Structures are given as structure tokens and as C-alpha cells.
Length: 285
Image 1 (spheres, rainbow, N blue to C red):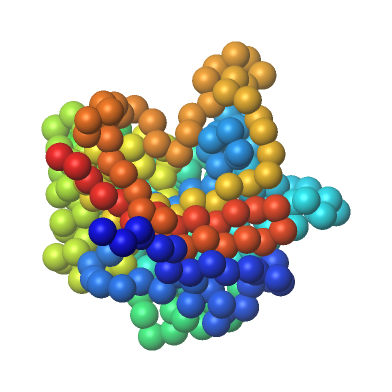
Image 2: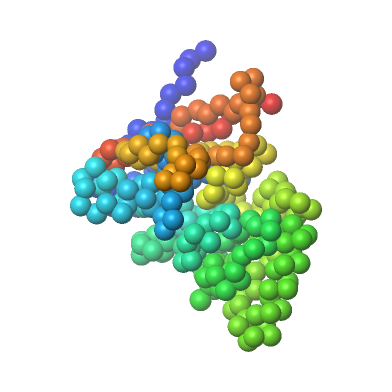
């Protein structure tokens, strides 16, 4: 049997990666297609777990403006925005909203915004507890740029309904109440959530943004076709300043040696000291 070959090896000479180069590197063959997108340190840390740090930005070194080793962080940001611009739906955990009050998964770069012209993608949030602020910008697109959706449990659905009533009573009403689905009793059934996105919203390309618990659940449920992983040139160690364990990009799951998913390298990119990897998942059970 011939050995598998990497389809693409790409050098991103300009950290502000041109749209044509992003389109070629992240070309998807086949539909529907679901991918995870994460950035980790060399030692596999995905979340710093420090107060005031949002995670991906610091992991990718985007906070270091004048350090040449950090230049690839801009390329990572371009890749991240490209995913938001091309996916039919983005699925993220409620923790991202709590950590980032401005998160909407909407591209900031004009050339990537143009890819959304004439389209209205879904922005879906997973919250088992229902503890999200319905005033958050992701639930209130100012110009109707996206469709907000919430996947929760039956208990979480009750909390969200009560919050909506309070906001209405206080005349602090969300501009566009999100479509809410209760898909589970004690935890969100991710397979049902993804099924709804594909069936009811005609999602062909799904971008799962995490966090690590959501990502782990999606991998465990064998919902992920591809992992898009940026390796950032720093080492953080596995403990934060309080001695708590820092997570990798999947957490809360277990596989054994006999059933752990394998991943075939599809493409490899380099921007300065940052490495961009595309792996196609191969489930063994």
C-alpha cells in the first residue's frame, strides 16, 4: 500500500495571508464537513487559565506586537476569521461568551466580510445550564448579519425563558431572541444539535470553536471530520499561577490505545515560527 502523502505544504510569507492563499490551503472536498479549529502551545496548552486572559489570542502570541517570533499570530487570526467567513454555521461554548463579552465569530477584515455578502450564517451557542446573557452581542446582530441559535437542556431552556421575561419586563429586550432548542435532560446532546444545524439550517460547513469540553464532546461523538490546529511557538507548562491544570484543546473524555481516533495529515502551513496543521479524522470504533 502506498504511503499517505500530505496534500498541501504552504509557506505563508505574508502574515496577513492573502485570501487566495487561505482559500487554497483550507479547500474542503466533500460535504457536509465539520471541523474543530484551535491554537495550542508547543506543549499542547489551549487555555492559559489566568484571570483577564481570553485564551486563543494569548496562546497565538497576538498580544506581542513587536516580537518577530510572534508574527505568525497574525496569520492565525486570518485563518480564524477565514473560518468564520466561509462556514455556514459556527458552534461555540458558553464559556467563550463569558470570557469575551464581544465575541460574535464575525470577521473583522473587510475582504473576509465580503465572503458573507448575500449569506446569513448561523451562530450557535451550547449552554447546558442556560447561564448566558441574552444581551450578549452574539444574540443581537445589529444588522441581521447572522442567525443566533442556542442549544441547551430542558432546565437551561427554563432559565433562558425566565431571563427573556425579565428583560422584557425591564424593557431591556434582546433585539433578536435566539432560536432555542432543548436537546438533552442533563447535558446537551451534541449529535442532535449538529443534526439540527444540518437539517433545519442546511449547514454544509460547520466550524466548532470550542472550548475544550465542547471540542472533547464533539470528538467523542465522532462528529468531527477535521482538526485545524495552529501550533504557537511558546511553552506555558501544564499549571496556571494557582496550580490548576491547563487544558489542551480537548478535555473531559477518554480513549484507550485500541480505540483512540487517528488523524491523517492533509496539509501543513508555516508562517514564521507558527505551524498550521490540517488533520482528517479517522475513527476506529
